[in-house]
Length: 219
Image (cartoon, rainbow, N blue to C red; front, side, top):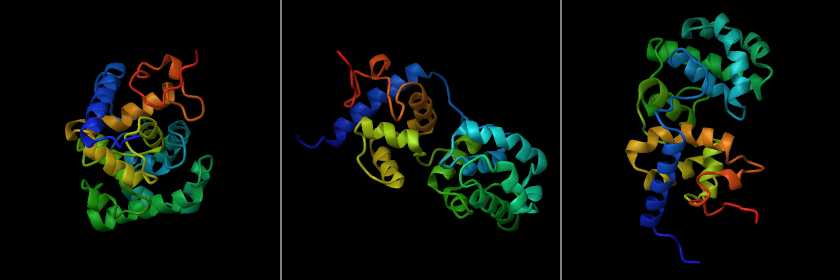
């Protein structure tokens, strides 16, 4: 099979995103509960390898006890761990989030930084987390957050075959116009939950099955 041209991938990506926009009209601004850039940042760090629903169950108590960088920075990681112990990797996340709050105080005057370079300098913050915070908290799209939903779906759509999220992101940035970067993650998360599930995708009822090269339609 001949290798698909970049122009063809861009055309397909445009069709697929147009389809997503028709399914999920309007601006999508994130699915994790938060009240400000700091609580969003902590929630996204906690969401790594954990469902948003699980995170939303622990953050009300977490932010009731430690609602700001100042209070969170003085928290005992073991106490944080007791609040978030129902989510995956809670010990590491409790340490990272406390360290993150401390760095926000010492290096950024108590304000969540608003650049990719500064955000990714914080403990527990990679490009995915930084992309979500920049997009949802500051209205800036410097890239595309590649979580498990995005990774799975763009492979099924054959927009990338890369085996690492950072490489998948670079593939997507080549085929998706910058003005659409801000909508990709949130729309694909919703699409992945409703239609393109990991184990049993609902190809037969998927409104984009005619555009998907991996769709499985039973006779």
